[in-house]
Amino acid sequence: MVVVVILAAVAVGLFGVGRLVAVLRAPPRAVVGAEATHDGVNVRVTAASWTGMDHDMSGTAPGYTMPPAMMPGMPAAGEQRLAVTVTVVNTSDETRPVRPAREFTLRAATGEKGWEPHSHTFGELPRLAAHNALAGTLFFDLPPADLNGSPAWIEWNHEGVVSRLSVPFNGAVHSPHR
Image 1 (cartoon, rainbow, N blue to C red):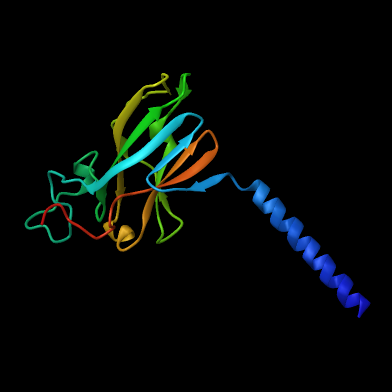
Image 2 (image 1 turned 180 degrees about the horizontal axis):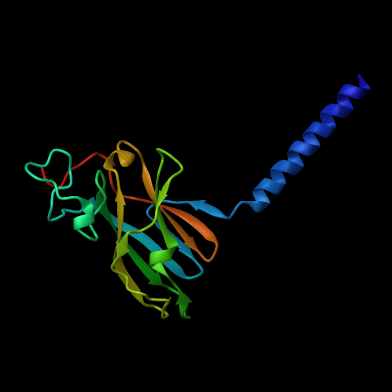
């Protein structure tokens, strides 16, 4: 009986220490709505929608479908471009480092895969002056079915602090050409 109690105590101790180590190693994460603030920088996701491309890349396009290799910058076959509008505001009294193109990743509940922005409208801004704001759009290329019926969020990794910003998008498969 004493051996069982000792083994149970050791198991609980090892599980507790293992869990504590795992929590300490995990990066800080705040699950939030469409807005988050860290170190005086506020970020808000304001819109998301599929962009209309000049050429129908769907498998149901009438006529000849030009291969993506012949159209630099176009989404790969089977993918569409999702535009996500983000506003970044420095609410502090000091200049803050901000690299919007590097700090955001699109994620969906359908899997572990994340999508880095294909392109963006932020420019190469390395910092944001005190009490200034900028709005820009991040463009992600992905198969629309990867968001079908799945919640999506933008993961914002700013100076090691990770926040999830919900994307105001219903995830329905949508073709801008229909």
